[in-house]
Image (cartoon, rainbow, N blue to C red; front, side, top):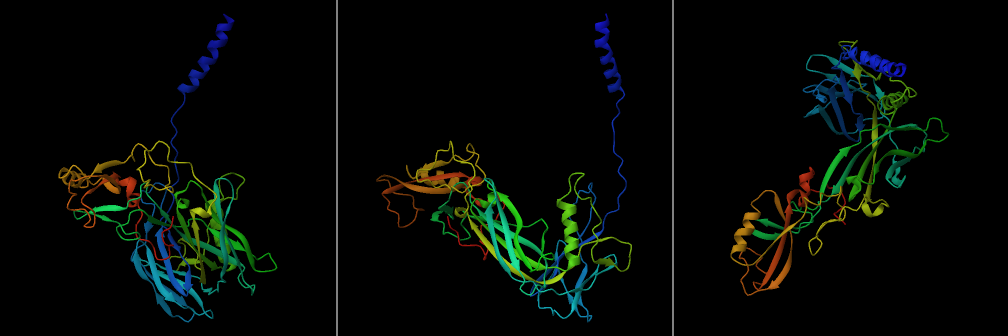
Length: 429
């Protein structure tokens, strides 16, 4: 009996504990948001881009709240104004302007609610050139990017970088012909009809800063700028980094250091605790309003890095097992990520028997989901070829045409554009 009691007692205690549990609903304190956030430096010798937005709460369905119809201008210490034009989505731009390094500059903003904001006057810093930007293999799975720079006059000391990255990518199947206006015609490479290579662009979303303040010489060496995994689509074909370098004041460097700590280096009780991001922008009409951002002023140095897939020692997993390929292998070996082999099997159609071929061909390609891939010569036949083939094609030669689902052939279905940017290298495999 004692053994039975010893087993029942813990069960009774556990049952009582579970029956006393009540659902817990966190009561979060009401937090004031809708603060004005200002992003972007004043640039000499290039265009100045300023982005205005409002802070939102975690429960807000709109996380990116642009500040529209504001009046924005750069002002120098002689009261001369340089107005910015609104471009939509909270973006304001001043065209290429050469500011004097003798004067100081600030940003003036008037929002539609009548509030006026001004930054502190800051000097126009001269940014030294970028010495080099390069990549290294960090491990079997990662490529890291680095920058080197220096100021021979020892006058910079504080640096910031950001970049635009553009990469090309390809579909699984390479398409060499198209069915257009009732004709089967070749696709000219690097033309508006070419769908074998597309391009996507993104902006860096991390804070990259460096300082030589504790060094005898103003040298930045091996400053890391982030990295990519070898399974990234960005490294599958050609990757281009357009790096920008800015000179900062010490106050500007401290602001970005604080921002970097708050946004990237928190996560445990041993990390630095979050602190108020105190910038150099103030609400003149309502001094107690919090304003997010820091305005710096400088020239900008630019450098471009092109990385071809053949430059990299990394390779992703082989994505081609189990696919029955087209006889002339019109597929890409640089496709990322691995394809769904079941969805990307191709189909074929022969030019004979004619005349049923013409109607069947037109019917297939009137379906939005299919795209022509390639053709190979078929056996000789005395049956005349379809009238909509190329005029120089011998009537006695037939062809087998291959096609597949659009998202396996047309690179635009993944969201990019097939128009190559002017700064991007010519297509190369």
